[in-house]
Structure formats: C-alpha cells, structure tokens
Image (cartoon, rainbow, N blue to C red; front, side, top):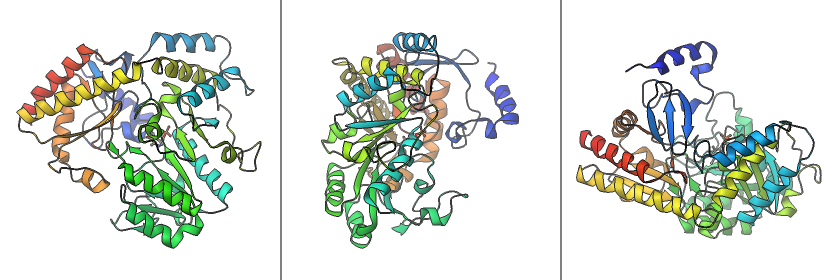
Length: 427
Ligand SMILES: *Cc1c(COP(=O)(O)O)cnc(C)c1O
C-alpha cells in the first residue's frame, strides 16, 4: 500500500505551518499523518492513493448535499464564466438572502460575510453597539471562531471572568467575556445577577457541535431567552454549524426558541467561503451603512459563493429532502449502537437532524463539556484509525461532530456499519 499522503505532508510542512491551513486538520489528537484528498463525489471521497472513504466530515459541515453535486458545480461554473467578483452588488446576493429568510424567517435582515468567525465577530460588535454595553457571555466548550474576545475557555472548571485561551489574546480583550457551563441555567442566572446591567449579549451554540455533538436542553435555551428579555441583552444563536442541519430551519426551528441575532456559516456557502449574520431588522440596521456599527468586506457576498449556497439550499429545501437525510442519520446511529452493544462496547449517540455525536462512555447523559471530556479517548483513537483503514472518514478528534448529507445512501450505510462491526470487535 503506497502512502503518498506522508510524502505530501512532509513537503507541505516546509511551506505551511504544521502542513495545514486549519489547525483541526492536523492529526495531532489521534496521531499519524493527515490523509490528503483528491476527489469527492456524493457521500464518498478519494485520497491521493486512490482509497475511498464514506465521508462524515463533509468539510466540517458545509456539504449538506454531498460532494460535487452536479447542480452546484454547474451553478459555480456558469457564474464564474461571467466574472468572479465585482465589489458591486449582484442579484445573487439578494436571492440567497431571500432563500435564507424563507427557510429561517427570523433572518429579517442579513449581512453576508466570509467565514463563521467573521459572523461571530460582527455579532459581538453589533450587540455591543446596539446595547451600549460591553460584556458578553459564552459557554464552556462552545466555539465561535477564532475571535479574540470569544477564544475563552473557563479553564479551572469554576465560573470565572475570562481567561485568555490563547497566547496573543490580551487579558484586556477577554475581561469583558464571561463564561458559564453549557446547559446550566442556574450559573447563568448567578452571573446575570451580578453583571446583567453591562451584558450586551449571550452567545450560544443551540446545538453544540464543537464539543462533539451536544444539543442544548430545551429549558436551558428558554432560560437564556427569558434572561435576555429581562436584562435587555441580545440572544445570539451561533448556528454556523446547526443551521440547515439541526432541522432545515436550524436549531431555532427545532426548539421553537427565537434569538435576536443568528450567525450562519458552513452550509450557507455549500462548500465555498461564505457566512452570514442576520436577525431582527431593527438591530441589523445598526450596521453600516444604515447604522453606525462598522462592518465591510472585499469579497463579502462573492458571486461564486452565493451561487453555490443558493443551489445547495434550493436542493436541500425541496420537500422531504432534509427529512430523508435525518432519517438516514437515525438509521446510521441505530446501526452503530446495535453493533457496539453486540461487541460489548459502551457507546452513546446524539442526533440533531443531520449532525451526530458518538461517545465512548457509560454515563447516561452527556450535557456538558465535562461529560464529553470524561469519554474514553484511547478508545476513540482506536475507533478512528480502525474506521479510517476500513474506508470511513471521521473527524480526527473526539470533540468534533459528525455530518450526513443527502447523498448518503444504502451503499454508504452498509459500508459504514460493516466497517464498524469489525472495528468494535477489535476494541
Ligand atoms: C465552524 C464554526 C465557527 C467558525 O466558522 P469558520 O468559518 O471556521 O470561521 C463558528 N461557530 C461555530 C458554531 C462553528 O461550528
């Protein structure tokens, strides 16, 4: 068996930091060499040695209708033939915004940006500008991109004022960031009792996808909504990952709880770089040029990304399409639990639409970061490498969620479950 990935990775390391352009792609958490990919079609990807994998990473979420969907490829090609960027408005931007609004009615007004990080960064600035307050509250284990003020982990396991989670983030920047444990509304109420008057926003992943996949408890989200209504802080749902996945209309439709602002990313671009901030028009209109809060972007609303996103959402929103992918996801998880049980492997699964989480744990509930961190990490590493060898591509970390697309079919299911049966037996 050749391994061109090793040679390519060695070469990449001479030019790119750590050989990758996003830290999560390095196999640091699982060991070994990242696999270089050369092609994707539907649910499958092919590496540089010609090995095929059923893909549950899907570029970390964006590819909701699978790799190289013909309609998406066509839309990008046709758009590109007419020029790739103008720095002037195009009709496609309005069309994508209209489509998003039809699916998520809470997005009364949108601003397209280029990444989820940017959407969250701008959400914080807008919330601060609109409320005239500085503090933001986020949750342990929630990720909102590499925004300075949001790169905060609580660290010591106690409620605390922000401690920078990365060198290079000044304490002065994170002093206004409060953190609380996920799914723990009492902690939120305590913090709000003390800091409510200066609280601009509560940011939350309503389905957390950056500590494996942990859906919020409905009463937790409702509690956040109530706290925000009481204090005048804005409730910001970071649906960069859960948008168009937890349900077609995102987590907000799934729970029936409505934020003031929503961050979207990943699926909204269908595999090209775009993201969006949106929400109540009265708040959104505080952004420049209608309002005083500055925000701009050279490639924001890029035509290729708009075409890719619009086509992806149009396909995904066709009647029954998303529901079918959700049902497929449920069958996948049922099949995995069944095979794990037969092999005597303690496995818990979570599903939120077409997102899923696998936990090697015998705890009977996983609701917070501590529960996730307590899972059997060695077992995950062996499972990950076993599945990789058997042609199933999972994210190289026990803290990532899994994703399913509308292209995942019977053959992909059978392949995955056969692989899992073998790998569980070896655990
Ligand atoms: C991926 C992600 C981000 C960051 O998006 P990028 O496009 O990687 O900058 C922010 N929030 C959540 C919930 C995410 O999953």
